[in-house]
Length: 530
Image (cartoon, rainbow, N blue to C red):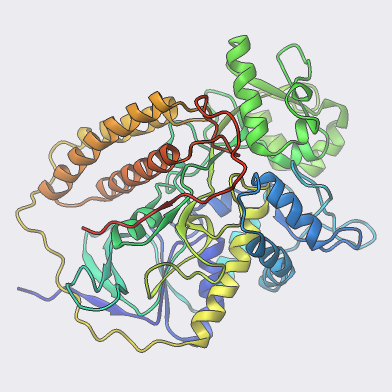
């Protein structure tokens, strides 16, 4: 039998958002880096981020205030030492982006033009207009290419290779991964002593999401199958203000719009947020999303609205040019019309249990960014803390790995086994199972949950996982099959975590346990041991 191709590197980074690219940029001078991404480099959540990046730089603000806001938003489930560490390292991350060429907005006097978002007690959001993520992503990609770092687009990871899977004695260790070239269909191995997962979240597990199609939870599922611990998956953040229009796919109305004075109103222009929280429209996302959901159910309306008409056209076109133009495409003039919005799945607050410097429960495997659960976000992510976490943890992870270089992996990775698999002949089955998972998660494991809904979801997911497993081994793997497999794992992990939490806290709200427990505890799921 012909030997499968094996490619060696010192650092194998999976994912091309801010966490992945920053990890690669920091590691490039310490050894050979390969970045793999399953679409194009820019096809990631970072590229869609509008609002900005949290960082205390103003003399009237403090790290302690930022940390307290983060803990409050996270319903005190955040890990306080982690929260303080990441907040205090944020300025270094901002300077990393400036070094890449990102030009953050400044005022006429040359000072930073910081904005404010829901849950923040001060203006501490760095932004580059209303396409901050896009500008950061473009700058990092330019630097990646300038530095000659190897990257492989349209490359999807099938599974991680570990010593346990190879039947080797001793502690479980990651040795690299089997990957597929989506264009040629070739399956080969990338072998590395250091694999860094930076694959983002799993927003596509829900029917309505503002995430790109790539957000199928690949890294979380890969890590779980390899045996890594997973944490707090019940906390899926729903962004409260996704544009509601039949032709608008995944377009967010940034939280910064509320930060600059927009109010949430019903179709008659009446404010309603004061009924739910004294902070009104600037309450944290979990509260705002539940409030909108409650108003929609109470009134029977399809959406609620944002009202920022008082700011005027000149201000809106200068501060939010991209959002203004996109709304105008759909016949909505922010300067004179109410903006229709609904909640949509947005951010995975849990994920692979990891330290701030990327350590997971498996040697040789690191996790950074949205796929990791460091303890920063707790039960609900504070607005614009995600890119800050990605910057800081990428830097800390790279520093740890560079300080303790590992010898190249000497183990021969076996050929990928095809067995008796044949080419798939009914792709409709994959599409149907994908759609069923997303619908049942939206209906049963959404913004408001109950024991009965979770039990129904768990029962159906168990059957679907069995059907997907049978399909996976019966037919040759395809990118769609791999994403479906990962999506199903993440859905099941969300349900299992939700069933273990007997309280309402942050993003996890259940009618059966409406009160918050006095003691804040993490929900931990052990990795697969099969």
